[in-house]
Image (cartoon, rainbow, N blue to C red):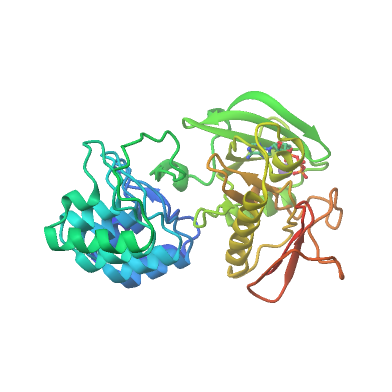
Length: 387
Ligand code: ATP
Ligand code: MN
């Protein structure tokens, strides 16, 4: 069977939908050149596949190995409708690739006049130099060049050349390398886990930082009294449902096993460098979470929750709070499936308050998405969602 990259390239909408419906598939993975499924669909002008991928949480400003974003590919290939969709989803119109080229450089070079106009109308700069000192308009034929300059001038763009600047951090992310083993092995071999540092010990068990298959992970070793065959069977039934790789705002449980000698249930997750949202908000020293970042976190969480609500059956015993949301290296908030409680973990007992919906709290931000709601009381001003 063809892989997802080929399916997206060829526009096989039915096959793509089936693949997306499997929560074990990560739609933000990249192929050998770092192209995501969205890169391919944008490059080949597969509008319906682009719609599906965006709806399921594809990252818009993700980069391949050459630092091209999907917008670069849509622009180079003259797919205007897709370009419009990407821009609507806040694609960065001035993203530069490894050559310092922006999407506008390519639209100009390939003579996609309307695409170039759309880009300029959405903030693309006509005078940014690439590594070789060329601006987008340098790449355009005379008629397009004059037209774009005129448009830019009307918008108040400064037409003097902006020299190429190598930005260390571009505000975008690369696709994750495809890691077949990571996705395919639900049951892990306890002997392959290397434990490095104990991070925490509490009522529920121990948390260790470690490595597995070349990946930095955290290992949670649960302490459960009377580990019966019944509980063991429940565990094996419950954990695979938490292997949700298919949404960027959900942090999957990678796998699980039962450790010898007295078996303890063990689960593993990716190591998140910034820890939990709680750590970042209340214990973080490296950066300040300003209002924009708080709203971004809240929106990430809302997207993750909206996705989890689409699952049939719903995941039981999921208590959303700032300790069960992890912050990834690119500052994306991800709802941790490792913090979903198992049926054998003291049902009904809560150790920290979940985010709930008390009446009459003053609101600063409201997003109306669907009709249950969450108050994120860790944010000041608090951010309320109707999910
Ligand atoms: P509970 O046992 O109910 O889940 P908890 O979440 O406070 O309570 P742990 O799950 O042991 O306890 O987590 C302890 C700390 O370890 C968290 O506060 C967080 O900072 C850190 N941590 C947890 N998961 C990860 C992860 N995937 N990556 C990095 N740090 C993590
Ligand atoms: Mn936890």
